[in-house]
Length: 88
Image (tube, rainbow, N blue to C red; front, side, top):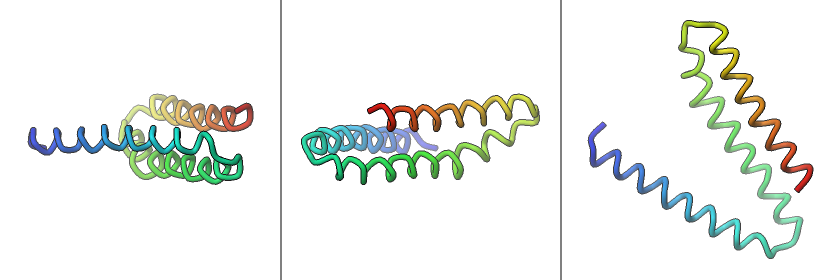
């Protein structure tokens, strides 16, 4: 990957973070029904990225227990999202 391409991707990531923050601040004053519609999309995006991008990379490691630890950490992340949704 070239330096210019890496800089462009970093810029896209930063713009996405700012856009996500703006959307969440905008949705803060909305009805709870709208917030309940946003949460499944966020969780779905997390799970999609985890299953399509992260897990294949994690399973390439030849050490079985290292892969198990990484998948368990991923599942803990999903569990924490569920807890946050329940006690929000």
